Length: 250
Image (cartoon, rainbow, N blue to C red; front, side, top):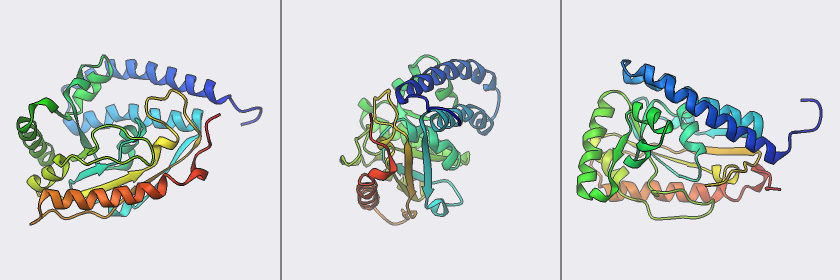
């Protein structure tokens, strides 16, 4: 594009304004999809996700590169992913097969955003419910897998900064073992370009790596969880030390 580039902070503000506007528009439009099958609703509502990822690329210079796409199983799976920003929750709709997220029930109460989210039939749990939350996750997980959807879980529970590690909650591995589907680990360094809770975005290329599927048959949840964590931690450690992938904030 000819001429001087749009200042980085102005680009981030334009991106945020566009995201807000499209969220409201899609929230109302998504209500029209209520009578449709889940997969049709998914295809329509995730167009919003695609718009946000596209807008981040065009306005903020935030691109991504996927490695290991051939590791995606042909059928449903439980994807255990690193969680660093909002970027991965959006980009997964165009990287992974149709899926639902395991998330806090409170997110469904967010105006506009929560409307569309609820129509995607996520596995919404009450974290304070203890064992009851696991039962909720298993019951809803069986339903979603039966409908041909995979499940995405962020086992760290909350977003972490690049290079930061945390224990993995065992629920994701436990669910995969209960459902009899493989676990697929996912690593990335989105936090270098889209820091958590940050308005200002940084131009660069997010590296997203999909690891080999981990079989769950005949294995304990703790064993599967440990293997997934070891792979994700090791891969993220390499990605977090890739300064050339993102331009430092000004």
